Length: 93
Image 1 (cartoon, rainbow, N blue to C red):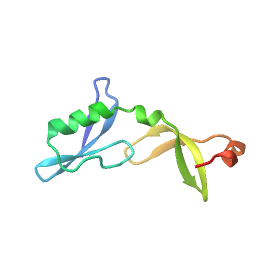
Image 2: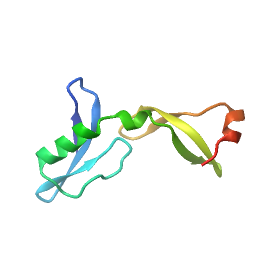
Image 3: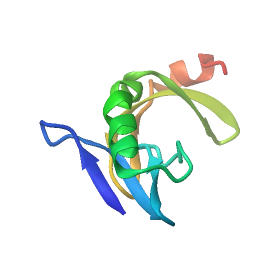
């Protein structure tokens, strides 16, 4: 799988070869396209950027929805920051 990075070397996602094209995968591991050509895959990742990682997300943990923010995105894992235990109990989906 080929990594795609922007000009400042920040990883934007991956392009997985499939048939004659490439499938675009974001930093959360979601496939965003079917097989597209290399240029279209690069363009999509460039336009997507990484801004969506700054948005708060809901994570289901221990049967409870927690409001979290992504702090770290690695190829094999994501690091999250969750609020204090008290705030977790107030979190709503």
